[in-house]
Image 1 (tube, one colour):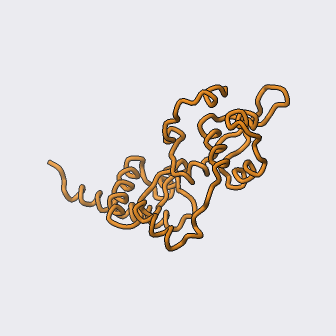
Image 2: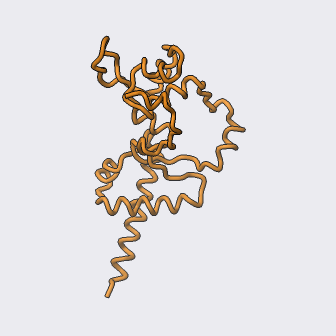
Image 3: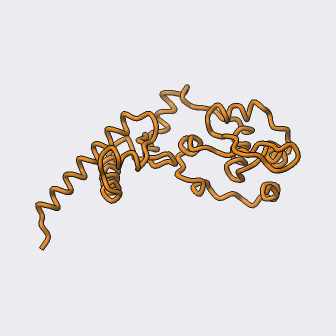
Length: 186
């Protein structure tokens, strides 16, 4: 026989923990990892999963949603309100140039790549300002060197890139159409 008092108490505990998670997510400027949440709230992995599920269900009826990124969990405004935000706060819209998006896409899909690899795919010289913008945003980093003449730096995306685009991993990127010039990089 199941003890309903214990079940009710456990459910209330997880509901309270979901509210604690919500408070922490509101107060945090960056996503919070599962490890941090478990440690700070003294939760097991199973308890955290249940509390996050309860939080997600509670938020489903409001304007915020629980979103998992590569760096952890965060609260964000539900997608169906984006048109309103863009209309009222047009200055918030960040325009990314086609060259910047092409460069970032090549790095994301084919990392690690060198500057030369990017130029080969795009067919044009890569502007230093494009790379500088990506470094300044924290979306790319240099990590290692290619064992070739000149030892060019290898470029990779960062967790900040995945957070900015709402990705939990690079596997979340949409499938890339078959493009021979991109497939030639290796």
